[in-house]
Image 1 (cartoon, rainbow, N blue to C red):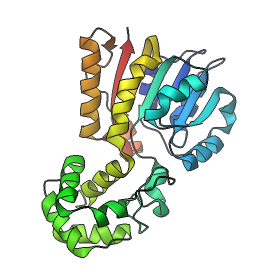
Image 2: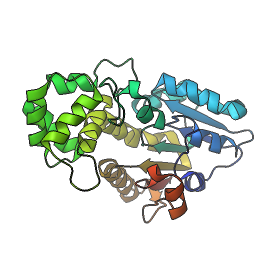
Image 3: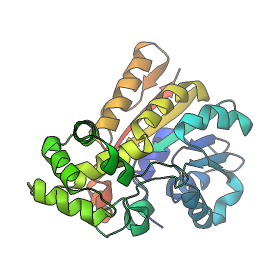
Image 4: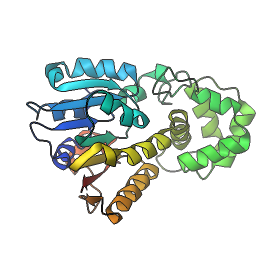
Length: 286
């Protein structure tokens, strides 16, 4: 199973007790879900994910503790209706790991990565209509440049967008990456297509809008003393989390538990290099 990031830290800040009801809002392949379930006796983990394929894989990976897990297909913006429908008006903790599932990145057919050629898809839920290819092939040059700049924080967005419009239509990840690399050669270690791919993924899945929905809904879904733990990997996301937490603290609705952002220890980064950019923040409701 893919190793989840900051597991010990997540469990610590969630303050999981044997009877806790915890929402893992980004179950993925079930790593955090299983770790939480292992600490429960009569409690439950509500494992949510927007991708039905991930849910099925998580079911297999967590079969040993399935009796303490409720599996649920839901995106962040649906939690406010989904949890009451399951019989939980409020819960003891919510965990959200905003990183992309390793399965999405390593399965070429999902089209998230340029490391292996695949269809230019990037949908976390393949029942959704809009793909990355749709955006690249249909947006105007200005709209494409704005998307790459705003979501990818890519300074060379105009140059890249111009090259993409001239070279389209695009159908595969490798085709897209090659045009980007030719238009904006590598600077440093980062592949020149990395930020554009990230921007397209965020746009296809409306990830920042979904995060806004989670940050707005979570306080009302948590009991007094309930914990909200978010792990982010991008500055855009971490900024939103930090600002939302600060606003709740100013309103007297919550207490920020992590005075400084929590990052993986050196041994975790060595063991799992994908964890190196992870940042954890935790909040406790008043």
